[in-house]
Amino acid sequence: MHRDLYPAWCQKHGYAPVSEKVYRTIFNTEFNLGFHQPKKDRCLACTKFENLTGDAKEEFRQNHEEHLLRKEESATMKDADKTASANDPNLQAITFDLQAVLQTPFTDVGLLYYKRKLSVYNFTIYEQDTRKGYCYLWPESEGKRGANEIASCLLSYLRSLPPKYPPCYIFQ
Image (cartoon, rainbow, N blue to C red):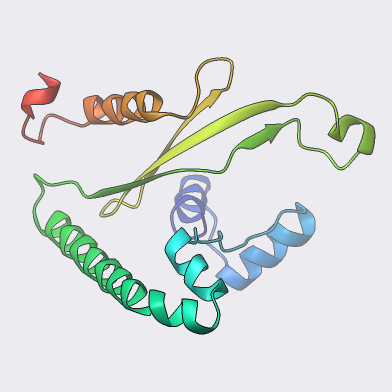
């Protein structure tokens, strides 16, 4: 927000932007909101390896080392795709993730906490080069969080891309 939205708002309204430190202080104290780093998803293989002990850990060590190599290779390929997307206007590198289920309403009140809640799903697509994010939200009454829903979100996003990207035979 401080990097993109705030300077644009200041320019539009004729204000000089303040430093990020001042921005965060005002945002946290006057608006009672906060900033945090989102938690990273932990994979099952790494968690399993961390919880093993003794001989079982040694038996699984080779599998875990191969897993870490594949993880590193995947990160390298992602970086290469990001670089290619930044250098070629006809490419778009994206990442996407399905957020943890959002329970609505969210409350700390005991009685309300145990009442039936509505689950809401949030699928987010992030464009690596433009640094724009797109969120697709739907309640459990409209669909689950399976392959069909994810594919529908991706298809909607791909159809919304400008015509500068070459068409793919799947979407014609």
